Length: 257
Image (cartoon, rainbow, N blue to C red; front, top):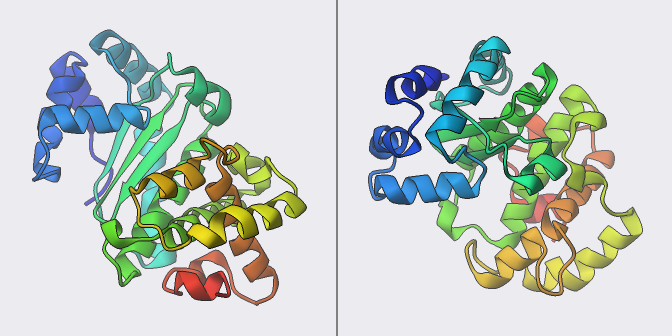
């Protein structure tokens, strides 16, 4: 598959996100349209019909679907990756955290599909960067021996670090996420020892996994993400590899456990 014409979906439904998520039900066999909508809005999807319709017109003017389609073809060829559907929707322009920390863009990847939530303010390179990050996830998940629900904290931070190193290699560090530069290497080394390593085997979805990954309670903001980037970057510095060469390498090997 390829980039889906979700702009047409939005036009046909009057922008109603509930109707959009009903169309997505066949891609989530075990979830209701309401559950899908709740999940996608948590990751940055627009929230009202009026918002969706207005923002989609701006994204169309910016050629977001064409840019993404061309980039997806390039990435598939470069990484010899699987063909999966890519769904593009406007991001929630009222989400202040999304706007402040990620310039209004976000993504969500599964082994068999990708979602991109894009702002009219995003540049062409930003769009390519977020797709690079999410498709890197898809490629690794398809080569990984574990089911997504069995991934541990160490698996998740390496997954995130690897995807963002791929962005840095293709577009430079200026286009990496803000969490890649939140902390010094000295701080990240301490976070690894104090927060990540002791909790490395906690399964995805468990409270401690989420707290360390995103940074809540006593854990620093986006600690797991930042440590993942640090670990992958350090591994690559000591080898002749590039990010794409690590897609099938075990997390424990990249983290030198």
